[in-house]
Length: 247
Image (cartoon, rainbow, N blue to C red; front, side):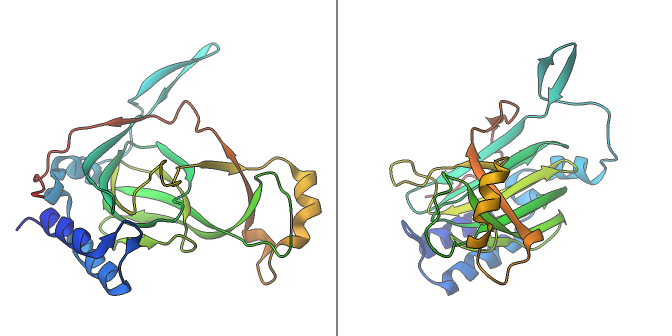
């Protein structure tokens, strides 16, 4: 049985519309995800390009006029594999220098596997404030991870309230990241993807600093506000060429 088919069957047995049915079930999915290689999802040729990549002055993506100069913004490709009410499976293929902006996964557990390439990840968790504090959608978050990842490597898991529920990726080389979301994003159920950036409202934040929980290093705290993803962030649907899942 193809690995991707076993992965689907494990997800189907392990996830519900509210997320993993147990820690053991989640571990079972993760163990299969750890086996996954680019060849299992039709990406061996792309992985070979990434392994031989030594940098390039060339760019791909859409050309954007910026005054007297032009910028080539790399376009991210998304390969859809499966989605149901309990989980979704898909692959993000990122060209070098492309960025997935800082975003959240409200009420969701996310398993990720870097299939090939190198990327930089920065992840945060929300900080609960002590006492009432009206920050008008500006919230403090604690740094969870700031590092590079290189394939092959083990899969990672983030949870609804910890282990980096908010994160951003920057591709160093061509790379591909397979994500399993449980439950998946759903506007109907209130699970929206929201993008964040560091807040510039320094005076307001300075007055609220006493509300941050004790025991957290100030250097690990960042204040975030919601914003619309920049026009330069482009994700297009690609064609999944791996084994077809049998439902």
